[in-house]
Amino acid sequence: MRISAIRVLVVEDYEPCRRFVVSILQQQAELQVIGEVSDGVEAVRKAQELQPDLILLDIGLPMPVLFVSQEHSSDIVRGALATGAKGYVLKTDVGSELLVAVNAVLRGERFLSSSLASRDFSDSKDEHPDHHPDREKVAPLPPHNVAMRHEVAFYPDSAALVDGFARVAEAALKVGNAVIIIATEPHRSGILQKLRADAVDVETAFRQDSLIQLDSFEALSSVMVNNLPDRLRCSEIISDLVARASKSAKGEHARIAICGECSPTLLLEGNVEAAIRLEQLWNENTKDYNVDTLCGYLWSAFPQKESIPIFKNICAQHSAVVGRELGY
Image (cartoon, rainbow, N blue to C red):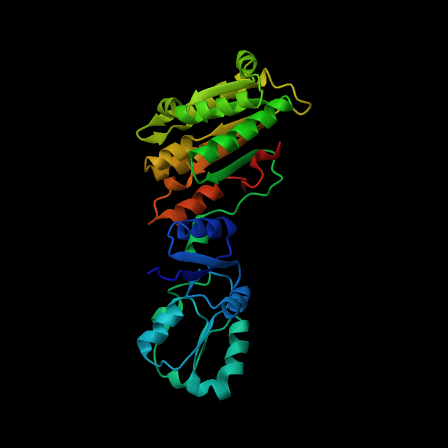
C-alpha cells in the first residue's frame, strides 16, 4: 500500500538556500514540497491555507517570535527563548498580558509572563542572538552591476552543466568575444559536441585562440601547493590565459567569457577550504580584466550534513547566483 506523501512547507528568506533545501527534499519521493515562502508573515498565512504535515523553518528569520503556551516548565520556556524568541506568555495570563507582550516584542524588548517572573532565564537570553550565525560568516552578494562578473550556477547533472557551458560559449563567440573553458575531459567533449551540432566552427575558433580549453585537473595541479591554491601560481595561470584570449576578442565591447569547474572539482574531492580559497583568489586576480566567469557546480558536490553553510559560502564568493548565465 502506498504511503501518503508528507507535505512540506519551506520557510527560508535566502533564495539560493531555499532552492537548495527544496532540491534536497525532492530527492525523497515521500516528501512533497507544497509551498515556499521567504518571511514569517507569509509562512503563517501559507500554513493556515495549506495545512502542511511539516514546516521547515529557518529560526534566523528577521522577525520577532512570541510564544503563547500552556507549558510552564522552566526547561520548555528556556528552550523556547533559546531559539531566539522575544517573549513567552502563559495561556493563563493571555487575557491580561497578551497585548502588553505583543507591544514589548515589537519594540525589540523581551517579555515573560508575570507568572514566570520569579524564575531565572538569564542563561537563555543571549544564547541565540536575533541574527543568524550563518549570515555573519558569509558576506552578502555583491551588486549585479559590478564590472567584473563572477557568477555561479548549480546543475542537477553533467548533461545540464554541459548544456549551460555550451550556451555561454556559443553566445560569446557569436558576438566576437573569446571563450576559455576549464573543465573535465568528459564535459569538454560534450561542450564541443554541442557547439558543432549548432554549426559553430570550433576548429577555426581553436586556431584563432577565440576558444581555449584547459583540463580542470591539469589546471589544479599547476596551482595547488600543500593542498591549497597558491596565490602567485593562480595569478600566473589567469594572466597567461587572459593574455592569450585577449588577442582574439573582437567584439565592440570585447570581453572574455570563462566557464570553469576547478573549485567545483575541489569540492567534489571534499576539499572545501581549497574550493572557497580558489574562488576568492579568482576574484582577486580577475578584477582588473574584462572577463566574465561562470562557475558550474553539480548538486552532488555538496555533502548533506554540512551542505547549507558550504552552499551559502560558495554563493557569497560570486557576484550573482545564476539565472541568466552571463547574459550574452
